[in-house]
Every structure is written in structure tokens, then in C-alpha cells.
Length: 284
Image (cartoon, rainbow, N blue to C red; front, top):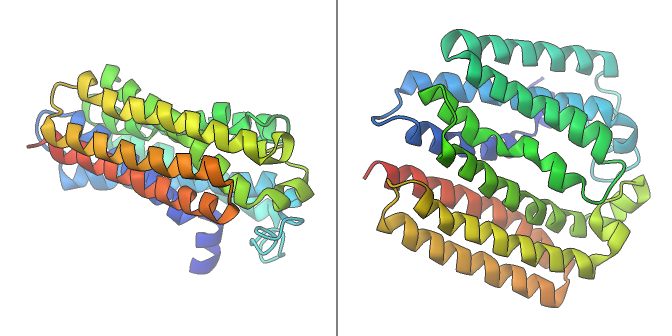
């Protein structure tokens, strides 16, 4: 059962979502969030994120069955029924909403639920099968982590929360398009209009580079959005921005699928380091 749960809920992706919640929590209070507050907020977010991935796999079960990367997932492989996955996803979402509402506050629960609704309905059902810009607009669902963190501690959403939201919004296209380059053949076979399939790799790497510039600008710009950010964050932001821009430029020149895969994983590490720098500098 543990193996099936992991395959359904994509825990490696969820860990990144949780990492974006923490900066909001630490910035949302003048002191320190308690271990109880951190634990419950992360638990509720983890469950809502898990529910969204379960529902995503329920909706995409037919596409998953024809893609090499996904055909061994529990639903297309027949290990669990689509009906069971649907019921499980809904129940886990309800549990998450209840935990966050009762133990934290309603705004936090609404933020988490909005992430699920945007991911399931806006991205998975509407945009992903229809446009190469699916991840640009649909990626909004993955930007809500900082809003959850702020809401949990402050019960409101100030400007720095939305700057963090913007940062992840600009990070998302470059991150996912790099993966789409590596998996171009799979997406093409399944008829999913990801940018490398529709517009080619050259346009995709150009767009990755442009979004890397925009994302780096937002990372450095956060120094000016929150007066608690100091020299540690500013230096970290500049150095990290230089590194990801160089990586994106090399990908732009080479258009290499293996390098695209490495950029995908590096971008995860990059966002984690930015989040860590924000948490540390906010309390120094």
C-alpha cells in the first residue's frame, strides 16, 4: 500500500510544495512558528497536494496508459480501479480541508483547496490537452505554497506573499518545459501539446532562457519587497541567479535533451535554496 500511495501522490514533487510553504510561515510572523503550527500546516498541505495528484492520475488514466513514463502507474496498470482513486482523492481533499480549517484557519484551507481546484480543473482538464501555454497559466496552482504559509501565520495575504507567488509563477514554465524537452517523444505520442511538441525545441529553450531571466529578476526583487531581507539573502539571490542563467544559456545553445533533464532537477534545487535563504535571513 505504501508503494501505491507514493506512486499516486508524487511525494518528491510534494516536498518542493512544502518547501515553498515554509518561507511564508516564517515571514508571516514576527516570532517563530511553533512546531505544532508547522507540522499541521505541512500535513494539511501534503494531504491536499496528494489529493490533487490522485485526481490528476484519475483524469489522465487513458493518456498515462500510452506513455512509457506513466503506463506503470497504479490506475493504468490495473493495480487500483479508477473509481477507488476518485473516491480516495476526494476523501483526502476533504480531510485536508478539515484539518487546516479546524487547527489553523479557514483562509489557509481555502488557499490549499484553490491550489487543488486550479490544478485539477484549470490545468489538467482544460489547458493541458489544448495549448502549449498550459503550464504557464495552469502553473498558478503550484504557486500557492507561500500563500498557504502566510495565511497560516498571519491569517492574511500581504504584498510579500504575492511576490513569492510571482517568483514561483515565473519559475514554473522553465522548470516544466525542460522536462518536456526530455520527454518530447512521450508527449507527442500521447497527443499532449507541450511546447517542444508544438513549436519545437529551439523555441522552447529560448522561452526557458527568457523565463529564467524573469524568475531571477523576481528572486533578487524579493530583497526589496520585504525589509527583513538582508545582505545574506541579497548575495545568495545574486549568486543563485547567475548560476541558473548560465545553465539556461547553455541549454539554449546546446538544445540537448540530457542537459534539459539536468536543468529540470537543478531548478528544483535552486528554488529550494532560494526558499532556505529567505527562511534563514528572515530570522537573523
